[in-house]
Image (tube, rainbow, N blue to C red; front, side):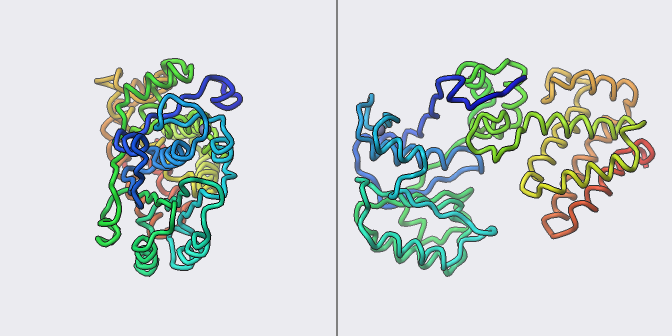
Length: 349
Ligand SMILES: [Zn+2]
């Protein structure tokens, strides 16, 4: 597969549809003071908020008020991230502290510069500590003019009841894998095999699938299809034994994965799907995720059938690895110990 250029250059990019609750608000132009978008990370809450703000402020012709023309001055500034009335707050080192909310307060005491509706987007609002939450509550109690707030969170669990009561909640549901696969094929010209692999890993998020395929603006420069291939090839080599399974290779793999802590969770998720495929390949080969690695799976299961049940243990072990790392264990050493267990010398230990 070759991926060059952005999705927009290669295909007419179709924006994901907004949830009906949001299109309804846009149609009536009665925008609540505060909205709370709830749903899993990567499901498209941020994109929906930005799209909502574009539609609310669009100056051009469009099919309805729920759409943005994407050509007018306002749309272009927003798309470029250059609009002065889009204010984004996100966690710093995992939390949103009061200083950040005070800074926000300073920014919204002046009138909006040019937008009809200024948007304050607070991402991962569940990362606010109690002080920050109370400061935000004060702002929400006396909202500045022509300004609406969108908070995003995975769940409502860690948000203050008083904040919840001031927000209209909009839930983002995971899309079906079938529909994501179809969109990748129809709107992005993916081949069906690649589309199925990306959909299987998307957690119900088209954005995540696009990110994996390097078709999104938010890849952070990581080509996930390439990284996925590398991770599976290396893990497969460890398991098979021989040259790819010697101590140097193993140490190098742990070191390379540990080098990018922000990619760690997704990297381990790749390895997990590969283990799952090993576990099911023998009796249900048509349900594997990594269909482009069928030959490798065939080889592993043919030569070492006992690895199918073992792979289920590895999946459990991988959860422990994640827990340990979250509890501040050294990433490289934890991964080394884990990879060592995959090598033939230790497989049946
Ligand atoms: Zn517009």
